[in-house]
Image 1: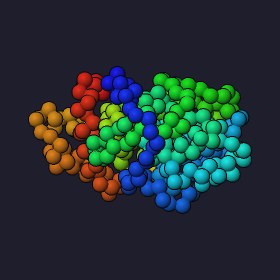
Image 2: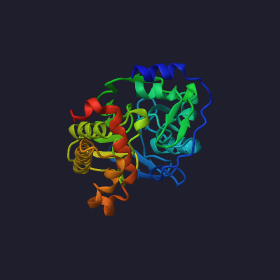
Image 3: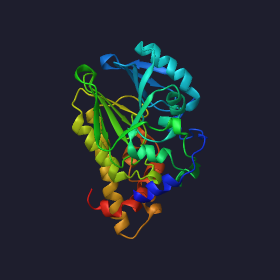
Length: 305
């Protein structure tokens, strides 16, 4: 982590030149669609990631914001849905542009941006994403989080209580959840999915073992009635989290066996470790590749998971 911090402090601050959201799971050009969640919350999809909004004591509260190109449209819809005159707080569940593309616009409007400290550091750095074959320039200061934490924090109290906490090195090394306690709505970001396979961003220290542990954290928070909102796809239940956890833990074990036998990535793909789930969830090639590559930076933790 210290190496990352040094890289980030050395990064040249410049205007954010956000790349297109070209991962198929994060298409950002669909019409915005709204659905109701418990407790008067709303789920907005179509801007590249699921966005959750609620009315807070000081204005609207958002979790993630989607693509930069949809920021004005998103802001207007959030204000309409919540009846708030302003958007007071925006949680960023990780650094990636699928979740933070609109941060520039919201930050410039005075919205407090809350995230894990690692997310703030990544957003101030040049990020070389080897698995995507692209480089992300540092984000503009106005887009970066203005309030950060390491483990967990709570805003508000009573019916307005919102808990947020760290999901370890899951999708990235700065993933957080946001839990609207009264509504029993748990926003998990890209630490889980409602369809398809998750993205393991190993260039910013996400890894398959951390993803397994992140799901364990979410399962410990949820009950059978909790509505769990992923980054993409429909909301899921605790039972679905358990299913995903078991699949990914099995992948981790099988990759370990293949690695210990002296074989490599090609052998992982050839083994078709997720053949039983392809009809339901689609082609797992990219997920398996990311899972395999993610382990190399976590050899010490590998045996401990």
